[in-house]
Length: 340
Image 1: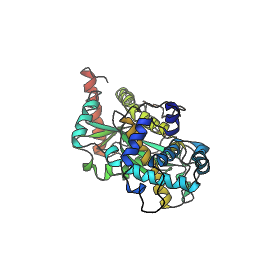
Image 2 (image 1 turned 180 degrees about the vertical axis):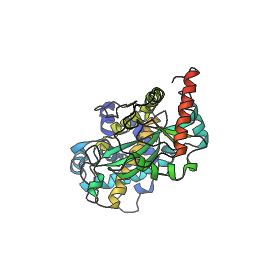
Image 3 (image 1 turned 120 degrees about the horizontal axis):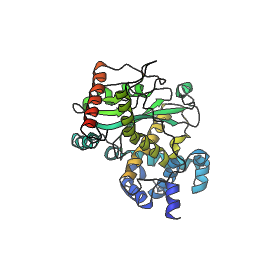
Image 4 (image 1 turned 45 degrees about the horizontal axis):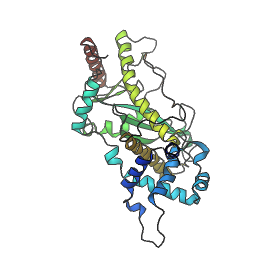
């Protein structure tokens, strides 16, 4: 198999693949004391990466089993083992930046007029190929498909630093934000004055500064419009990050997983998280750029501020004040010759 074919089939180059296998080969999940030893880790990981990276009928258990000449049960078993092993890499690979690392991230965003920003946040719908058997209607999204909503945070290098998933497709991004640890335990994630940038689907909070939303039947001020345009240009990084994540692991475009109970949902969440871990693994090597099979669908920029997307929760007074302070800082940066 040529290097190009290998990357298309297993979603990473040979060096990155071998490095991944070396990192997980000592995991107890690959070792047993029976008289029937497991297949090599390399073979099990090939099956798993093909499942994670394939969209549509090509990822059906029967077809994957036929391609690799293994039983349907072995496809499930290999995938579950590898998901468990990959998730053991979560701590070093998908980790919230330390106070020292946040200081380094701050400098990058300060250069573009957002002093205090330590990341970008956005929500993404991971589409399900079929309606879940339990609470199915709850998973129907505004986009007209069933899915699982996921919150992601990334830095300016498109590394994913936080993932919160498992919510039904009807849930709004702000609802996830209100319930995730970033909001319930903010001191564990933010130092004083630090915040995330977001689009107008989020409400202003002390640690989240979104684009301004257009009041009903009223336009934004010129300053708010200019601020939104600049923020949109910065936040395109998180949109590109999500697009790259889904393009590398195209099963996220339509998960062919049966969701009938809590255990099934745990497996789906593990699948999503494993793809995030692998995304960061690839960012560390030569696999950062990935040739797209089809252009990822992104959100259209809306510098005017959306008004038709429902929000959950109200902006706090502190959040509104924070948004205005960041606006003033961005204006000052522009007046001092910054990129804004």
